[in-house]
Image 1: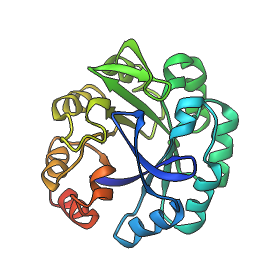
Image 2: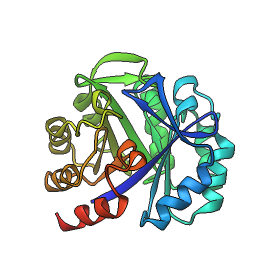
Image 3: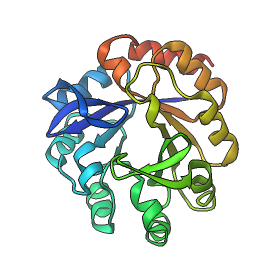
Image 4: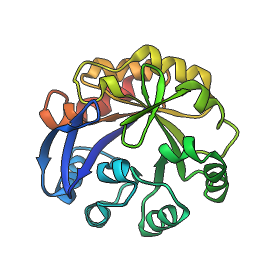
Length: 239
């Protein structure tokens, strides 16, 4: 199972939110490039980047920070947040982002997203953020009436790289993932599913690997030191 250390960007700084609440922010560093280098030094062979300003406002507000990360490390970087047009896809892929996560626009403009997937096979990831099993959009501020599994099922025949599935209620809370929701999603679709939200211990990592997740994104627990990246990578390999 792949381990994706998360670097969440807001105002050019590395931050973490609790349950996606922009008023519950902790700043963990003002040098995103150095943070990226740290995770690579500790064994990361891939990174998950999030433009939180972009997710909320639909604009790429942290381009300089992302560009500094790409210049600092030589590992695949996946980026989500504010990817809502062909222009933004073309820009990010052209400067070196390996995969782009699209969430809000996949729900709101499915025809556009279908075309984007076909133009960029294997480069786009469907980001599904859910609260109580229902899809949330616009930086998690709006909750739709669409079930997460229903949305995922609509895209299994498209050339997506993966699905990133985030349980908002667990994100940043250090309370463990929603294993039941993750396993239900994995069983419902044939695409690789990456778990996000609440990964706190090595046992969490092992259990996600055992239920067949393709990867997991780890954020706050790495920054606060309750989980060491090397230990998480080892746990993912053992299961």
